[in-house]
Image (tube, rainbow, N blue to C red):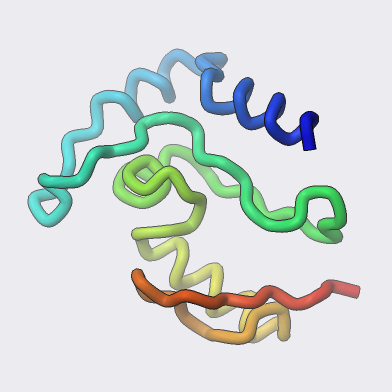
Length: 110
């Protein structure tokens, strides 16, 4: 998927919003994340981008979630809310995701 690799490369280098870039790069880790290396770049999409029927877009800056982990909807309360909503809509096999959980299957949306 060369289009995907090109997209990701451009995405993680994006600096189109100077105020957001400044904020995400200056976020100080919370005490419990003091030993984590923060990602501090735009977060990457995940899922089957070529065949997706729905898209969920996160609101920046995800200071201690995506900004820390580099993965959208992880590490903060937005993830818990999102996955519960997907489960209730019949689009997820689990209502909640915890760090270290191996499999979350998202179902087809018709």
